[in-house]
Length: 95
Length: 208
Image 1 (cartoon, chains in turn green, brown):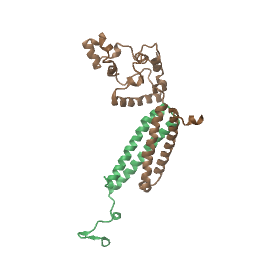
Image 2 (cartoon, rainbow over the protein chains, first blue to last red):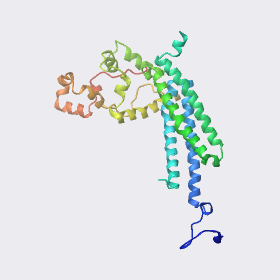
Image 3 (cartoon, rainbow over the protein chains, first blue to last red):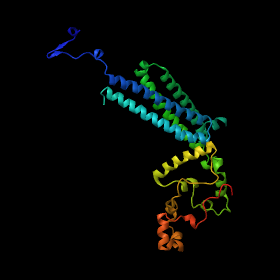
Image 4 (cartoon, rainbow over the protein chains, first blue to last red):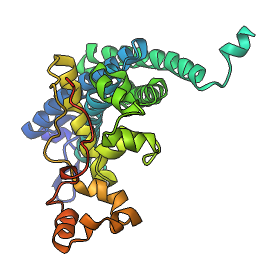
């Protein structure tokens, strides 16, 4: 197999990306990111649902729920989303 | 005339249109998020999946919640307290011109010009507003669960600094004999002595 790889002046060159074995920690990071993204989506769905209920039935109680539960869930979702994006950028060595 | 009404710049009409747009945006955001969640991991990691996620989490919901907040503030009555049955007795007393309770006196004489509940029940500054918001969640809980107490009770003691914020430097306050006794003055200014020890109560009891 090594005979098919290009040789540099100091020995065999680096393996092509497709042949580099994936680090277990990287797999763990990706799996965790998927769960975090799903959680962010569900939190956003919750906040959008509260907003929709408030639009359809505009009562003070639903407005209070929108301002507390809705905005709180959405803020948490945004934090999770940004965290996943930053993690992804760091993994790709952009940051 | 109907078209004028439909497209007039009246705030309530704008709120109605904003509400309609908000419903559409909320439905779109929900559809985008459900689509994203129902797809496989390969598609989610693709550029299409990432753009979908950006639209579903950032773009559409932020506009939805912004419109929800704006429409909510527009549709709320002048005082949100009037919207809750819980506050009826206190609002009635506040608006009663014959009442001698402190809150009614403040409103009757316009010592507090607007938002009478909020002005006296929030501390000053950003921290006061945040604490009031957090406390408001407790009020919502009592309203929903039907556990509203028969008597108004504050969490902790009412901060006399709120009274002194307006009254502390007034001529009337400084001229009052009871305020000029050095010992009493120190106790009042430090908050050790409550204003309500000498002045009428701010509100009536709910069962009175």
